Image (cartoon, rainbow, N blue to C red; front, side, top):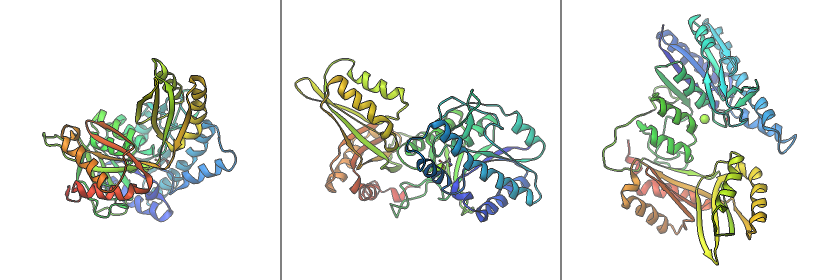
Length: 407
Ligand code: ASP
Ligand code: MG
């Protein structure tokens, strides 16, 4: 059998019929080279955003089951159009929804995880010499309901299929040339990386580099699946390879990111006694909230402040839970700050070199920027700062670590 390669095209790569024709030629080229392409596509352009607006114009808080039903339609449009385009060029193609290609997920609507993929149908179509076009971002749960994997989830569909089909390679096509040392729209001299390790890419993705869905990188790392991120607009560029990279001892900052899609919450004056943090965070865990940095500081008179960050779009669901907690433990109040951003530097082993942290803090100090929260892991240092100064800080930190010279 021919080698299977997975190609995933993001929304901008299939934004209109012209773009669809363009990627069609590229897919057919792979077929002519003797590969069996399995293609995963996102919804056209910003159509997922438009579907969300449509739902919100009916009700501010639609049920997540119906949202998944609605959002999954975006990908159905792009897969069928792409299959038609391929057929019109004289090649055999078939589009399949998540359900049709056996993508089984857990029951959690809007952020479902893939449990398994039954590849029988896809394999049968590949063996019938068809180019298979799969709807990204969606699956089916054990109730037989459509689920979605969370925004940007088509990358995860692509990697999961690559693993299940034992593909040679998984290519992620987007509208930038690959992975940069910082967002090239903000930092003018950001450099394109030739390769990056799974660990570093995972951190960059989690910390705001929007180009990859973090779960897709995690899945690729777990299964050692080679990923390539490249542009469908400039096909002569080879993009960035994400793979296991042998690291020597020297720690090096590889990239800087900014995430302004966060909110900082502070619950002030909670009693300083066992079980308090557990009470609050277990209530949040029950709502599947993505909690990030957590800081507790002792105030005075056996009272603590607990601060943490969450994604902005979770605030609506989380606020009533925290309000109830404030009442229950007799805390003073819940303070909400939406005008913050998280600036992070990423690189294997960077916290083992103290000059890197001090360099970062020093550069922020030079800019007169106050650091509100700090968190570290072996591979990253993140600071919460004022959103207004965030872009300036990003460029300055990129400059400070001379990332424009990184290959
Ligand atoms: N269409 C979905 C979104 O916009 C999934 C994806 O593009 O990966 O989030
Ligand atoms: Mg994406």
